[in-house]
Image (cartoon, one colour):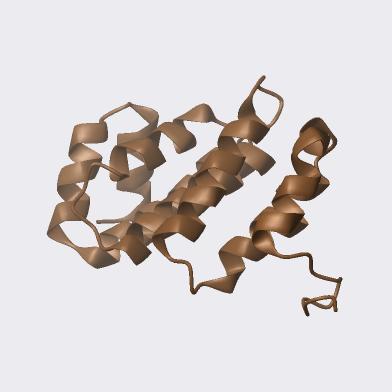
Length: 143
């Protein structure tokens, strides 16, 4: 399926069609995530986030689910972050990434480098640093 067709499914809210397309092909799922990035972040469109939620209905591996949660967190933190509660919801999705794929360090780094630095989440910063490991700017653990 072409990315233009995927974008049309998302923009017309045909999330059932989107799910069916992804069931047919893992390559389509990767293309969908690229389109979600464009729609949700670059265009700042909430439909990108809703597409992520729809994809979570698929039977996926933990790693694939984590990737979708990561995209949802990214859309919420970078695309539609002016919506009240977007950062906290993005943090929830980032934490789901770690829960589903704890060996993937990118997910912990997302929490530490993005969500722990957001002023609206300053009340949670200490807990996030404790739970996910304080890191310096080079990505190595502080001793």
